[in-house]
Image 1 (cartoon, rainbow, N blue to C red):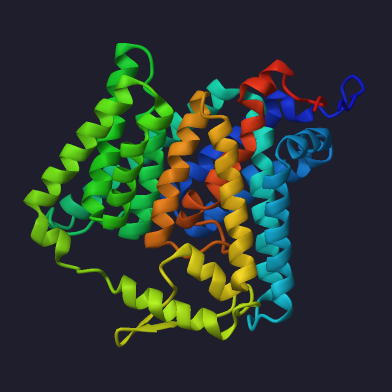
Image 2: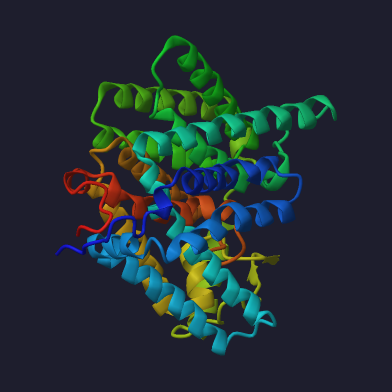
Length: 401
């Protein structure tokens, strides 16, 4: 099926100013979470640099979205159904901020809409934005090292509490791991750039190690061991072996430190979460509803697992819809695994899948660290029609489907 466009119609999103606006917004999302002076400024920057251009360009780029829908009907449909179910759940939710929760669903939609628009920059430029984000995050890591270990004389054995919104050791490690993975399998050309690439990776790896997040380490190990399946090159196999040996050595040398926190009550929390889900299996508590998990004689803010968190808030239908979104994203990334960006995105999806089983229970809240392992992989999947071979055969898919 072909949708014809009149000359000049729907082309705003390809203008340099539009792409620069969106590109800066994407880098802001990746790096300002650490470097912005406050969370309020980070949120305001996202509105100005990412959501606003997506809203402004939505109507001129309507044929672009139609093309994406035709190429990815399962992914788009599951996203809209999930957001619609979340909005419907506000009817029975006990939250006092229903309007605010509904507004956040719109923000999620605008965030996802930005990715097909951003894809028009071309794969090479999108990958360059990832590299810029990685370098800026390495700068944030260096600042964190200086402030936490040098200015306050904290010993290296103490868990790192970083700057900005990556201050939480677990969630901060997840964010930095995503940037590290995007850099790890995208080695630049040229000696000088490769030296910078290695230094950046060293800073990011040191950050993850000093955060002492077992969840991030397990997710990284799992991802690098599986990566040769879709990378299909010798370098990925060597990297898998190297990462395995480094982590095995670290566990051997720091076994007592690694095991000092036990299982962090994860099994108790999971059991308590299932009991809470059983109380409202079909409807859940509603979007944004306040709840607490009572486990092992303690109280926890959330379920420490994305799937059980969604089931608590949105019931089993909401959990099934989220799984539909996640698996539809996987399908699109597998289809695009022959492209460089598809390979990187698939690695991030695998990492995120493991990470969200171990922590990170915030899916519809304001943009925060959890978005890097929830909505970011979905957004990357929405870019794939403009990255894979069939899309290239049809040009830039401005109106051809």
